[in-house]
Image 1: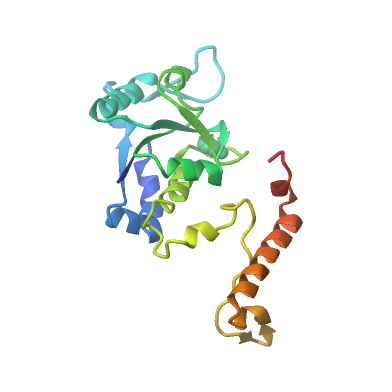
Image 2 (image 1 turned 45 degrees about the horizontal axis):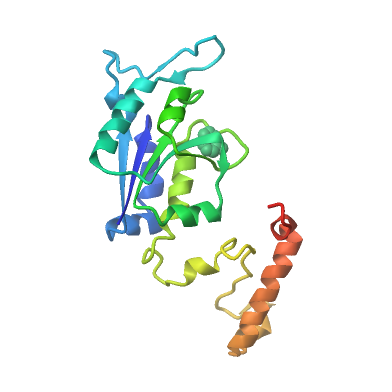
Length: 228
Ligand code: ADE
């Protein structure tokens, strides 16, 4: 069983994504436990303050180290964590490869920054892995953390009912997925490719592989070059 502890100032932001569909089923069936921790609960300030002005001046607020460290220390005293992840636009870019790796872990902490981010000393002394979901800036790490959790949890064995389904996703073999069709075979005169109706599995597999290559070459040639 995997356990994910999420440290955030906005735990409610996760209610939507975690209470529907596959992630919900994964939680309900006990494949993953997700704990949301409100960093503000660990503030020792009488006004529950968790951020302050940056030393050296400049715009925005910085999350103070105290509440985050107190929460991290409590969790780390209770169990061993495989990784302590910080969501940040300057982290390593999230990928299917990283999702695969994280899906094999037992205990993960994910720290979400807000405002200008967290005090650098938290990153230096607690964080083992910094992850970005893309080259754009969100208002905080929460949506990014939800994306990472979603991409990881669906890979836990038994979470997707058809066990082979995750293996045929785009990116899982470095290619985009081939097109898919369902009934009716003729919709407004738009026909499903004949081969898919042929019942000839080897030909269908070959067609799918050809389409995956064609699509990738056309839409994401960068995936086929060595640099990516
Ligand atoms: N926090 C703000 N923007 C982010 C991004 N693009 N990825 C991860 N965390 C973030």
